[in-house]
Each structure stands twice: as C-alpha cells, then as structure tokens.
Length: 382
Image (cartoon, rainbow, N blue to C red; front, side, top):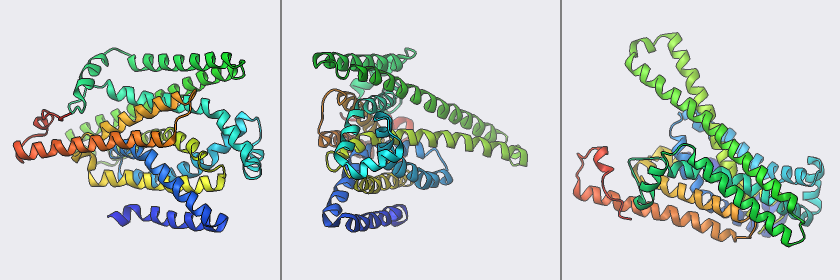
C-alpha cells in the first residue's frame, strides 16, 4: 500500500536529485533536498485539507489528481508561475523572463520580491475565505469548542465571512499605502495592486468554491434519487445521466483542489528564494515536495485517517487561517519561512494529539457499540 501510493514520489525524488547533481554538483543536491523538505513541511496542512475533499471523489479522479494535477502543480506553480509573475510585473515577455532567470538571477529574484505583495494578497484572501467558511459552519464534531461554538452562532449571519475578509483586505491595503507614503510614496501604486489582487482572490474562491458546492449538492441529490429508484437507475439512460453528473461534480472539485494547491504553494515559492534564486533548482526541489504532498493526500484518503482522527481537518483549517494571516502580514513585513512552517506543523500535531485522546476516551468509556452520534458528544479535552 505504502509503495503503491508513494512509488512515483520515490521515483521523482531519485530523478530530481540525480538531475541536481548533474546540473550543479553536490551543492545543488543539498539545495534541492532542503527545498523538498521545505515544501513538504509548509504544505502538510494542504495534504490534510485536500484529503477531506478528495475522499468525495472516485478512484479515477484520484488518479487524475496524482497525474494531471501533479503536472499543474510542478510545472505550473513551481516552474511557470515564478516566470509569469516576473513577466507581468516587469512587463517582459515570458521568453525574456526565462532568459533573465537563467542569466541574471539576482535581478530575477528582485522582480519576484517586488511582486510579492500582490501574490500574498491573492493567496491570503483565498485561504482566509476557506478558514472563515469552515469556522463559521455549525458542525457536530468540534475541536476548540470555546471558539467554535460562538463562531458557529455568528456564522448564521449571511455573508459574514465575505464581509470580514473584505475588512481584513481593506486594512491590509490601507496599512501598505500608509507605509508607502511614509517612505516617499514609492509603493503607493502597489497598494492599489494589493487591493485588486485581494479582491481577485476572493472572487476566485467564490466562483470555484460555488461551482464545486453546486455540483456536489446535485450529486448528493442524484445519489438519493438513485437509492430510492434502484431498479430504474440500472437502465442505460439513467446510468448515463448519473455518470455525467459525477463527472461535472468531480471536475469542479478537482478545479477547486488545484486553486487551493496554488494558494498553498505561494509561500513555498516565495520562501524558496531565501534558499536559492536558481529557477532550475527551485523547480526540482519544490516539484519533489509537491509529489509527496499529493501522495500523502491520497494515502490519508485510502487509509481513512481523517475518519479515525477527526480533529485533523480542524487543525489543518486552523493552519490555513494562520497561513492566510501570515501571507497578509508579509505584504508589509518579512516573516521567516521557518515560522510559517512550524505554525502549521504545531497546529496539526496538536489536533492529532487531541484526536488520539478522544479515541482513547471513547475506547475506555463508550464501548464498541456506540453510535457515531454519541461519539460527537465526547469532549475533545482541549
């Protein structure tokens, strides 16, 4: 099971490290290895959240996520994306941006750094909306109940998450603009860019998440109808309609996963420049890390880990919220990548520990015959 799930990750690791040695010797080998670990540590929470979505998809779309999705993640976000943002911000053609990345790495790094406020605003708003919609939802299983219970009540207010996200974005852009004025106004125009990029991130979330939710609801309705009319569902016309609906639902959930992965990878791509400004080594290291994140996502789904450790998804969403705040803060201030990675690891480890304690309490006091509804009433102990 382990080899089947992580097999391609092992192959990509061996190929990537070998390519690094051929490209730049053992120094390049070390840089690629460090970048791989950085990407995995920063994106572990991504794997947990992805698993919560991927478990709703069939084996075919899980395989698409591991194949086509990897191509998008590795070549799109880890290789093409840094080149595209340089081309847009520096008003250069993609070919010129590639030449710049290969011939003048210091200038390339500076251009990417200049584009960071817009990138952080887009990714920060997208991730913030994911966190807010999660925390404002009234759910049976709650982890940090002293926070989640009152917020679930507030969540009954329509569009509250959107309003809060826009307020956060407005504060971020105004703070950035005020800082720019204090330093001669060199970045005043970028304050408007931050605002536009943040709104674009919000719109992207609403469109992709809305379409995904719509087709997921349609899928659930169709499954209920098929359950009630089992004999009729076996007919060719009925079967064809159901398969088409599954395809639509799975496609938009897949699209949602890719946008989510892109938002998570912002910090990894930007953080990689603290280690190297070589675009080849960056693509190799982050690409290897992205493969492991995807394999880990599928592993969590197939092992049923999220069902056994029910607070893991909570911890991952809190990590998303922390990462969203960190990204928005980095519009103005620099934060060490180690801090970013540790925040997610600590929150997920805490939620895992809480899940273990919950399972031990259930095993000791409830017995094997307890219903799932009764399980939700056991205190989380935090």
